[in-house]
Length: 324
Image (cartoon, rainbow, N blue to C red; front, side, top):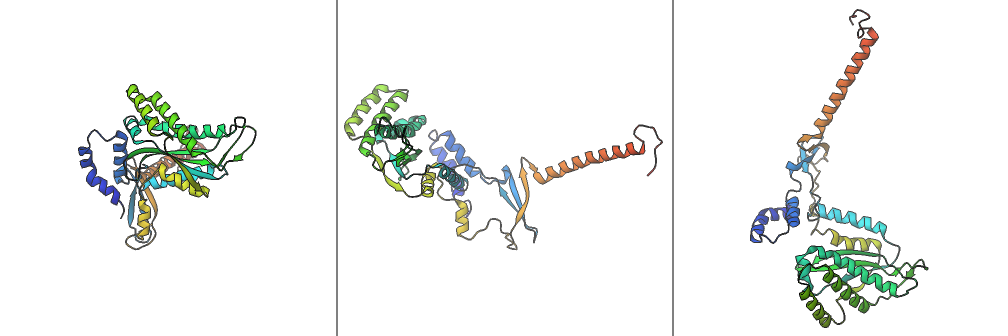
């Protein structure tokens, strides 16, 4: 089962690149090749040895790419655990801030604009919280993650957020706020985002200004914001957001375990294999240690011989050499 997804890319990626020549971004190409070469013994490996029968198994180093089904899943889980540890002790809810189809082309042309999505959505939420009480200026806790495609896998940039149901004030340490006005958020989100896109696009400013006016007429209630999803536990929050930080289809290690495959089980005698060696940068670590120990022992032997010579009076020629 191992390497099924990788094999699909090995068999089809070059042909796909040729068909879509000039359309694939450099970082996508780089991540795909990292995934394809993930675990290759040419890049180094860890060696395991069965003490029962002497069988040796080599496991190549991983690529650490988020795109990889082996490495990305682990990265996602580690990020989620770290995020959970930082969460404020408060109830949270997840929100989704979307953009109309007419704006997607701007983010596709200049992907640097994607950073505006979490910035503007957070600004909309923070400004609404602060307007609840001008004196307190309540500030909520926010975690945001960009997602660039929808369920149909088409280009559809939007942003997922986890927001505290409450905020810290200038006077009050913390105030719980259960009701959030999504109508107000939609209009704020619309205005803040359109203004920021207009300030950051490098060309066709007149064309965008015309589109901006059309969008205000078309979306009189603002851009769509979903925010009714309440989250019960911190672990649930972590898993939810973690899905969008590193999102491989499924970890191949889990596929293997499902089918009862133990990667460190000896195929010959079924005994558990143990770590034996590492091969890295065209050199075995075991050999490096052996050379280092031999060099150190050679120096120690020379030091011992010198000390012995001093004791016997040979070194300084004060006494005639004595035979052992």
